[in-house]
Image (cartoon, rainbow, N blue to C red; front, side, top):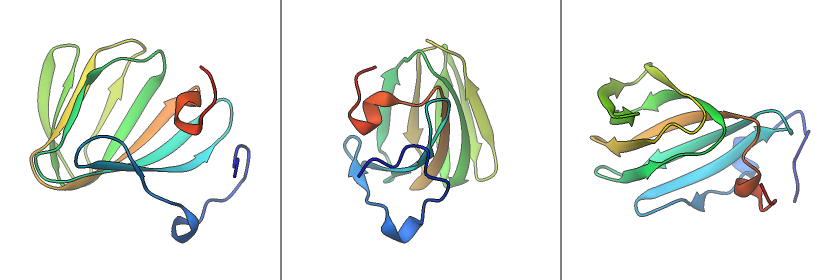
Length: 116
């Protein structure tokens, strides 16, 4: 079901989907301008280095992560956050099992099966 522009998203009604080895994501709320996504990592899971044209800001909800953005790596823990500029190469390694809350602008059309 397409949930674009829906004002509410209830966690219990949303499905996790695979997003890499040891990684799963749940698409929360979104419209054409912004999207919020919860991403869960098993300990040791690697969010491979990649880039995209979206601005991304993320909050560490749980766990400890080594986050690399444009060649700089920092260890972040619960409550810390980071900002990824458009097209910057970035990635994550889960030092402990954890959860990220990612916000993208504009929305990630590729996450919901639309062509970018």
